[in-house]
Image 1 (cartoon, rainbow, N blue to C red):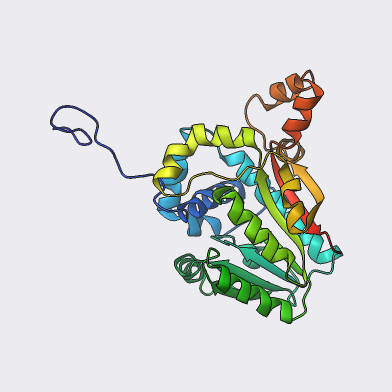
Image 2 (cartoon, rainbow, N blue to C red):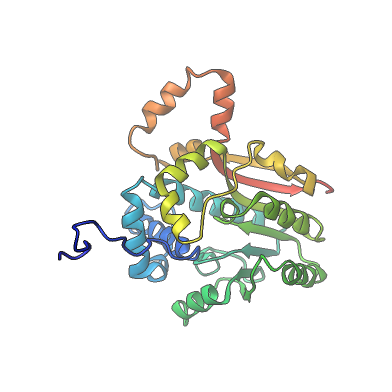
Length: 300
């Protein structure tokens, strides 16, 4: 009997590529490492390779066989870096609350003010692993890791209340989180954030229904097997958050940003050219296909 086949010659199911939603953090870290290693890198994350590990490299290799995933992850990282730094510089942000932080190393790699407070929130296993990997490395700002399951509504509201009581102006960041949540859970989180005094800005990435279909075709079985299915992609885009108390301040279309940063995929220029001949409704739809959104509280 050959390895990987049973006695009847049928291929045996192998281990899941993604075994838990936390594996997606390793997957993204690989692309940050690859970008960092380019001579023309648009950002530097010297810790990404260490954090991704061999497991992350294996996941990225397997997932890229289904469809290229590197360019949107790289563009997302670069754009969110820009927005975070600008918010700290121009909007009086003194605290960043990073939800489902994963292996994000921004408090270690970005040029942040030493007075800024950065709070990472994630499951204990994730933060334990990250902090162990970065032991001995210095953050550029004040750092706190909060071990908490965001699905625990009581616990998260308690955290939000504690941070609000300290009177800092806060930017909330949730990179790579919302797509894995059910709509009602996103709405609940949005309402809790909007109800918290001082939580004035919220930055996240957002998929549209068309992208969700593509992601499910390319990687759906792999992420489903790891109990990390793609779920959230509201047809109304950021208007989904209006009833919770948020309004859009800025939208960065993923494709436009990819061309600006020169991190596109093969044939991207052709698809962009052909897009000029689409009906206006389709053009508007593609502007919301995928992107990064900065929201502000409606009551401000």
